[in-house]
Amino acid sequence: MSFDLSILTDNWQYFALGLAKTVLICAISLPLGFALGSLIALIRLRAGPILNTIALTYIELIRNIPFLVQVFLLFFALPFAGIRLSPMTAGIIALSSYAAAYFSEIVRGGILSIPPGQGEAARALGLSYGQTFWKVLFPQVIGYVLPAATNLTITLIKESAALSIITVGELTYMSQDVIGRTFAPVEVFTLIALIYWGLNALLAQFAAWLEKVLQPQMGLARVPTRSS
Image (tube, rainbow, N blue to C red; front, side, top):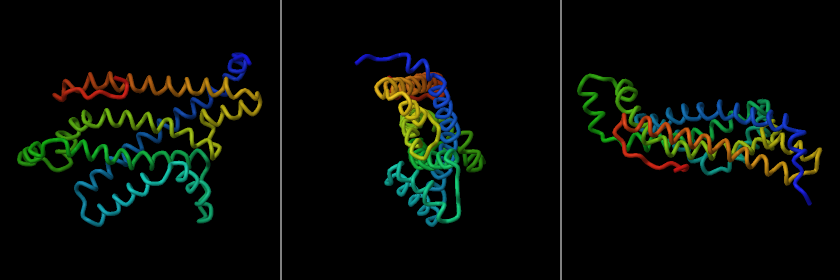
């Protein structure tokens, strides 16, 4: 049995389209997930017991149900309630909500890592809570959050492959289409494994560079990321 490179070169456009769709989905879902997760973290830190309980319930539900099951429920169960979503929309919502639950705990942990005296000093100077968060706490939170957020982002990029099950045309789905026509799973899966590895390696290297740039400004000791 030989490794036939022509199968990959003859179908490069399908892999390119799948990779572009994967990057697009992650480029939309992960920032949305981080924004929602940051809001949930603030709710858990500052809101009353009712909102805190709702936020905690959301986090526990999302974290304790497999992502694939959540995708199935969102795409196949909602039509029974009269809500029909396209595969792409369902995939983005599923990945965003899944990311938010994990990002919320990362951000909350980062905020709690900052000495409380800094927030007290900012409020003593007359800054509102919002001003204190954005001008004093948030720049430092990035330093604490970045390593864990990078590892989570890498995991979520890999999890996006599960969206192929609802026919989202991302990299894994397009690769399965090529396999269905060429009957060459070894060549195709080898290529997509290398593509996922390359994509995540680039992300890890960018995050490591960003840490080196930001941390001297924040006076934080460097915490190794997954790429270190």
